[in-house]
Image 1 (cartoon, rainbow, N blue to C red):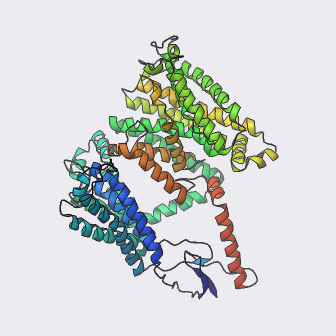
Image 2 (cartoon, helix red, strand yellow):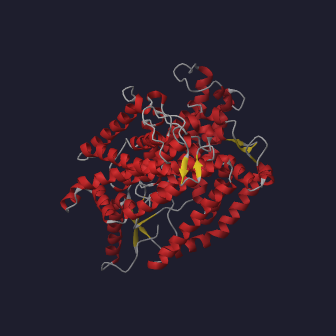
Image 3 (tube, rainbow, N blue to C red):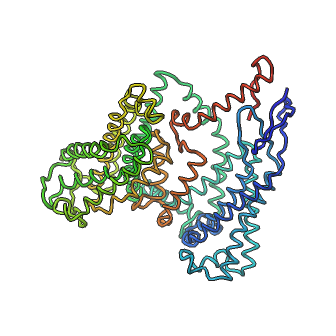
Length: 614
C-alpha cells in the first residue's frame, strides 16, 4: 500500500503508509523561510514608520508588561513564524509530521522579521528620515530601543523576533485540544483588554463595577494577575466545553425538515431576545455603537443583494443612502429651504421608499447592460454625481447646498414617541426593527425564483440569458431592492443625527460598505451582520467612532490590509454562504476528487480504500 507524499513545492514520490500514524518529517525550506521573514521585516518597518506603535503605546493590554503599540509589532513575527510551517492539505496527499523543525524554523523566520526593526533602529539613529517619511515620530527611536542605546535595540529585536516566531512555530507542534486551549486563552485576554470600554460600560449597567475594578488597572489595561486568572479560566472552559460544542454543532447540522426549521427559529428567537434585553443593561456608549452597527447592517444588507446575490459591482451605493437621508429631511423638517410639508416620519418613509426606488431605476436603466469594470466605474460616477447635486448652488433652494438641512425632528412612531440621537437606546430599537425586516426580505428573496435568477446571473450572465432569464429586468430589480434597503438606513440616519450635509455621503462610505460585505461573506446574511459588527463596531465607520478609538487614523489602513488578506486567504468571506463557497472552490474540489480517484485506482479495481487522512 503506497501513498503520495508531497511538499508545498509539488514534488512527490512513493512512500510507505503504515497503519500507524507515522509521518515523515519535512526538511526545512530555507528559501521559503527567508522569503517569509523578509516579508515580515518589511511589514514591521511599514507599521513602525506609520507611527502606529507610538500612537498606541499609551493603551495598555496587560499592565505593566505589554502595550497595544508593542503588540502591533509582535504580531508580525508571530504570524510569520506560524505561517512558515504551513502545509497545503489536499485530498489523497499525506502531510508531514510537525516537530522541532517547526519551532526552529519559526524562530529563524521571526529573527529575520525582527531584523527589520533592528535595521530601522540603526537608520533612525544615523540618518534624518523625517523629511521623506513625515508620519513617523522622533519618539519611535526611543520606543524601539526601550529607552536604551541603538545596539540594544538591534540585539533585543532579534531576540524578541526569534522568541515570538518560535512560539508561533510551537503552536503547530501542539495537539488540537492544547492548541485550541492556547488560542482561546490568548483571545480571551487580548479581547478583554482591547474591548475594555465595552466591558466597563456593560458592567456599570449590570452593577458589576467591583468586577471591573479588580480586572482592570486604574489607568487601563488588565492587571497581570487578573490576566493569568482569566487565561486559566478560559483555557479550562475551552477544554471542558470542546466536546459539547462540537456535539451540539453536529446535532444541529444533522437535523432535517421541520426539526431543522424549528431549531433555526429557536436560535433566531434567542438572538432577538438577547438583542432586545442587552440595551436595557448597556450604557450610552454601547447603545450608540449598536445603533451605528445597525445602520451599517442595513446598508450592507442592501448592497449584499446587489453585489452578493446579483453579482453587480456597485461602487456608488452611497447615492441611495444620500437620497434616503435628504428625502426624509425635506419631508419632515420645518427648516427645509423651499418645501416643508412636515409629514409624520412613517408617512414620509413611504414617500422616501418610492423616491429611492425611482432613483435606483434611473441609475440602473442606462448602465445595466454593462458588465464588470465598466459597470463599477459608471456606478462610482453616479454616486459622486448625486453628492455633487446635493452640494450644488443650483439646487441649494431645495437641499441647502453646503449648509445642508438642520433641525430635523426625530422619528415619530405612531405618535407615541420620538426617536432621536439624544436617546441611542431608542435609535437602536428602531434600527433593530428595520434590520429584522431587511433580513426577512433578503432571506425570502434569496430563496425565491428571483433570487435564483440573481445567483444565475452572478455565476454566468451569458448562460443565464441563454436559459431564458431576462437579465436586464433581473438586474434592475436588484438595483431597486438594494436602493430601498439603503433608503431605510438613510431615513433613520437623518432622524438620528438631526441634520444632513453633503460631506456625510462621500464615496468612502460606499467603499467601506463593500469591504464589510466582502469581509463578512458575499451572499451570506449572517456573514454581512458579522462583518458589520467586527469592522464597524470595533474599528468604526468612515466618520463613526468604534470601540478602538485609538485606531481612528489607521482604520483605512487596516481595512485595506484585511481586504488583501481576505482575497488571498479566504475569498469567500468570514461566514460564507454554501453556494458562494462552492463557486469559489469548485476547481479545488474537482482536483481533490480527481486525486481521490487516482488513489483508489492505485489500490486496484477502482475502490475499496479511502484516501490517507490529512
